[in-house]
Length: 237
Image (cartoon, rainbow, N blue to C red; front, side, top):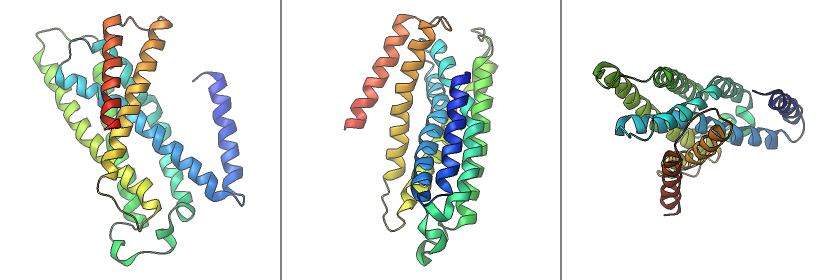
């Protein structure tokens, strides 16, 4: 993190603390939640995209995969922010102070935050393990053992990603209005996170090339753009 981003983060944290202690606490916590789910979903979806490329064995993607997994750097911050969210439970979620009997088995504070933090911890750990495997030196063509190990990690990561991110949509966002329910909401949230992560990957890829931080062939950059376009068409549909 550059000094300017550190200063901006500190200013944002101070502003949030003042807002959360003021009469506008609901607005402050709402802004906090929106930023939390947006950036956390991006951070875990980067490795998920790399896992998809690993499993499909896309020959053009090795250099792009290394860019995609760099989003894991935000995951420790994300976990701390998820813990802090517990402090705003009464302000954000009406079911905390006014339980709904028919939904109490799912929407109760202990189970709600317990599953959120547990799934996040497991997914984040797998993301770091997979990123470490991807960022190692290139695997020799005949090293089947390493390829199988990476594929197993990628499969586990994708399973945890779709479960966790979908539950973030259902739990952290949809339960803001506990009387409204959509079985598609979690899926929509996961797909929107994937689309946004492809947009971020395109930006990071171009930026890394421009700064000389990576040597990504123009054809690979075009392939990232094609994937982003395909996701935009699916999202439009």
